[in-house]
Image (cartoon, rainbow, N blue to C red):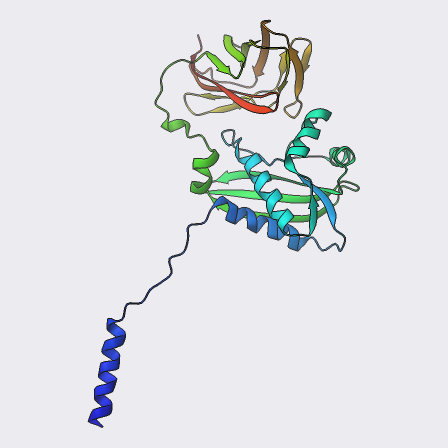
Length: 304
């Protein structure tokens, strides 16, 4: 009896002294959550035939998160391709067709737009989606839509912690400490000069002089232009014009040819500004120069 009791005590002591190793969980990444989104899209689509699909850029409600949309689309393209359930159009080819056909796409497409995209791209369905930040979470929403009927084949949603996407795509305006006024910006061979800012009857008008220094080239002017005031209010642009082209629709893109060394004036109107701001902290332009989409920023502009 004493022998067995001694062995039991020794066994207990050995267990207590022996270290237990717990595998530390790896931190999750944006790719982890997009994989969840892709798996849901595949699982929720119950059709037996293999569809040819195109993944469009996602669009968000946050005006300081423009880079997140292409990031989601690129990663989701990889995930859906690896699922072996769909034939996926390569993103670079998709962007080339969009540019050649002068398509202006957004996260909210009506049935006619979906059918038109399907006919041009030659796909059975498109994946489109949106994202929005709610407190410390970013919600991602995706839809797989038939380009023949406009019917929704599949929907998916996931939540990403804001801290994961913030260092990748979100601009934290409050952390910027540069107080200098920036009215002239040069990107590639284009020079952008903010030449005039006027406030009248609850409308802010900005005139930007744009000059191509190296060559004649076509530039695409998209509609996601914003101003952020010193109090943190964000206003979206509506009416835009350059040369003989103009539009009042955010989803419309202006395609305009710039001749070398000729300055052109790009006019932006921001409506329904009921409290005149004293300073524009950021004026951001959404412009595509050749195959490169740029976000041009003017900073700390005083309004007299």
